[in-house]
Image (cartoon, rainbow, N blue to C red; front, side, top):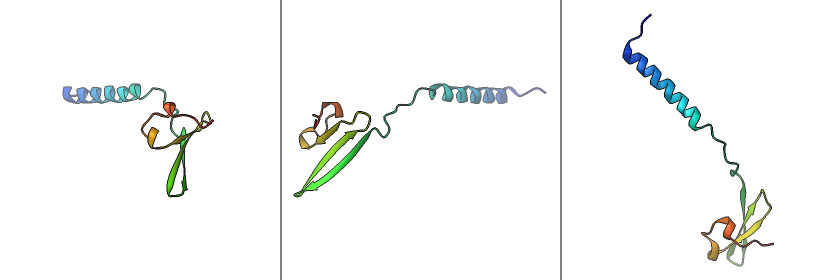
Length: 78
């Protein structure tokens, strides 16, 4: 049973694409999902925001001075 040349190329292309999807997606997934938790507290018309790193236990207070900083640059409460 002989296949048509265009059908063979379509099947070959689909197999190559299918293989590429698995090879590209085969990397190790990051474990950062769910790492940080946010807690808020309202005192005297002011909202306090605390960010907790669940892997290390570090708790940091976020205010308007360090609102857009990365977590590593914010001072710890400890």
